[in-house]
Every structure is written in C-alpha cells, then in structure tokens.
Image (cartoon, rainbow, N blue to C red; front, side, top):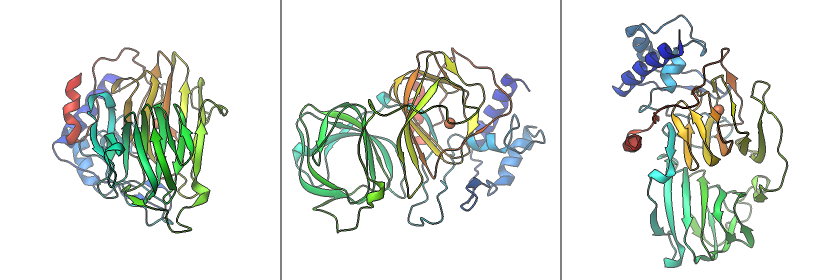
Length: 365
Ligand SMILES: [Fe+2]
C-alpha cells in the first residue's frame, strides 16, 4: 500500500469516526498496555465496510485497528492508563489534541481565586480533564503580580518559565527554569515585577488554600524546587531506533507516579522516518524552532496532548527545535513501525486532530 493510499484510507476511518462510531480502549493496569477491545465491533465494521482489513492487527499494518483508534479525531480515546497502586489518581478523559498553536487562543484574565486585583493572571487552558480538573495552562502573570502571604495547592503543580521572571517562596524563576511542587508545597509571597509567562500543569483541580498544609501533606520525595535548564547535561540517545541528532535534559522522573518530564533538543535538518507510539500520554509544548509532521508545521507555542497508543510521525525539523515533553501514566517507552515512510519536508495545510470545542481552530489554515 502506498503512503497516499494509506492516507486516503485513514481519512475514511476518520470520517466514520466523526459520524459517531466510537471506540473506547480498556487498559490493563497490570500490563500497562492497551487492550482496546471495548468497541472492537464498531471499528471492525468501519474497516470491513471500506475494505480496510488487510489481515494485520498487530498495530503495524498500514491500516488497522490502532489507526482507527488513533485517527478517530473528534471521538478521542477517553481513558488514560494509570498504575493500580495509585487508585486516587483519576481516569483522565482528556481529548486528543494534535496540534494547536496557543497564539490562536485568547488569554482570559481574572484574579486568582481568593486573591485581590494584584493576583490577576491570564490563562489559556490548552487541555483539561473535566473529571479530575487536571489541566495544562499557559499562564500570563502581568507586571506587578503579587501573591502575598502563605498558601498551598491541593494538587501537584509543575511549571516551566517561557519568558519573564517570578519569585515564589524565596526562589526566583526565570526563562527556562522549572519546578515540580507536590500538593501541599508552601507558596510564600509570590511576586513578578515585570511579568512572566509559564506553562503550568496541574494533576487535579488546583484549588489554592490559605496557610500551610498540615504537616506530612507534601511528599518530599517528589519535590523539585528549582532547575535551571541552561545548566545540567544533555543526555544522549534514549532508544536505539531514535534517530541521532537529539538530546534530552531531564526535568522529572516521578518516584511515585513514574510520570516523566523533559526537554528535547533536536538538530536542524534531522528527521525520523518511522512512525511510533507509546503506552502513555505524550504531551508537548514547542519552546523554539519548527517541527514538521503529518498535521502540518508546528511553530513555537504549538501544543499537543496525545493519548496512549496513538501512532504518530514521522517528524522532522529544518530549524532544529526545543520541546517540552511530559508523559502521564508512566515512563516513556516507544514502539516503532518496521517500515520507514516518506517524509514530506514541505507539507501543505494544517490537518489537526481536535475535539469539537477546538474545531474552529482548524479554519486558521
Ligand atoms: Fe512520540
């Protein structure tokens, strides 16, 4: 099957998915893999109806159930795997978003709950879990922002400074600095003289409560108070099949949830030719450079939330790029296709996978 035939077939599957044929994968928490058989019949029907079956159902066939699942666009996979030993972590029904440019969304400004006018912040919610309240948000702290007194969040929060400077609990964060603050971390006298923009990830509804948390609330093992990404080593290749020309700086390998965060830097003119998938959520915010892929050209400020087991790629970059990555549901592991694909260095248009509430962004192309 040629890449063009594959593309056309997958488009048909997408259309069927948009017509309402749904599939909801079930996860085996023990094995950390997708069983994806909850709505097997519906997907089989799509494949059969359009003669898509090719006898391969191992995730490597040109068009198979995995394609149907991962390309079903507006009916996204609605469950995220999580280890059984953490039953309090919610199932995370975030939609597949791949990709948006944050510049296409407006900031909405409001005082932080419980705060005065000096605590006003701008928020762009890039993705959100309506069940748990977990969110990935671009925050804009205006010049003169203040968060006086002592308080704490009841959820874990993770921040990466895109621009500007802020001080929190005696620590000054500037561009390309990072923190992971577990629930209960004491927030003391926040301030930003000239303003700051930061990516802000919460593990649940991030309600902020006055005063310090009860002793023992915060799990010290998970705290990363401050990292400066101008420092610290690049690590080498992290998978034998990962094309050379990229490096990773670790931000976090959570000792409890096993989730990971890192930045990835890639060289100009590098590309990979094998699509890949992971058993966990892969989330990315593009910090610098351009990244070319099947959905179009991502530019700084691009964002995706990709559910587990969604095939993606191949990708490349003319400029080289710097990406902020997170996983949810465990550490990253990667499965590649056996065969390489053609890589399109100059793709036309913008072909995102978007939930209905963001569908209007497709028009920007
Ligand atoms: Fe990936």
